[in-house]
Image (cartoon, rainbow, N blue to C red):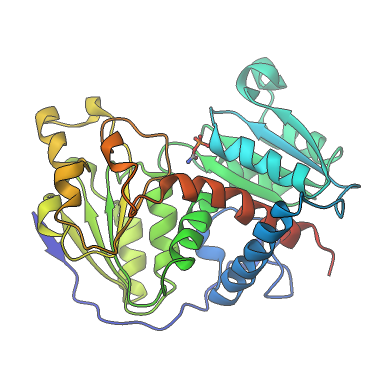
Length: 328
Ligand code: CP
């Protein structure tokens, strides 16, 4: 299957969601969806993230020693929670945390997320939430007097800070305009893939190949957004047809039980044979955790950037915390 839209190159997107931005267009209020970011805000974030790389090398700072971040995770996480918490510690701040909020918060007594957030917000300066329902972070942001960061909502929502660190990892290596990107995996429910597609749409002459089994293809809401913003894309079910031409291979997991033909999943995996067909300067990204879709034999290839990507999560999240916590 190969479906192509006819859109050509586009201009940078000035869109922003007023509810998630303050009166100053460079000032973020909440981070709920990646489409709320403008190119100037992304560049400000990336400049700060570069500074955070240097700050961490010096051992961090105490600049935010009077600030408290709450991490409220209703669903499991390794990278996102640890990197946000490390980010706040590296900035000198403090962390309140629950890693299994479905069990260790009053949700188990039937408390709604809105009530939990109203209360938690009175104890801290910023909340990072991973919610098990799509829209959970938006519900939190609507009632919170302190900034809320969506650390992944539901099965098919968004994971905007993952997309920010994905984009930063690419930005550190090459220009973002003119990129050709294959996004592979379970795309209909892939919150990282969805958030990344929105961010890529901000740049010029980007082309996205969505590569997945047909039953797991990217949902119409993203494709409509790309059409509206003149971003070129193709829907593909054969990785081999695109692997030679893309600059970035963004691999994600597929749950085997969701695929009609499990044996066909091999066609979407990255291994040493696929490496041979990729551009010599291509980048392989994966939000992690991985299973069989990304073979460990790829790890030592210079094109493998996924562990660096996880490191960049620390710098980008530090930068984002400063942008949300700085008063002016
Ligand atoms: N990429 C990512 O969100 O990883 P975690 O689920 O470990 O946070």
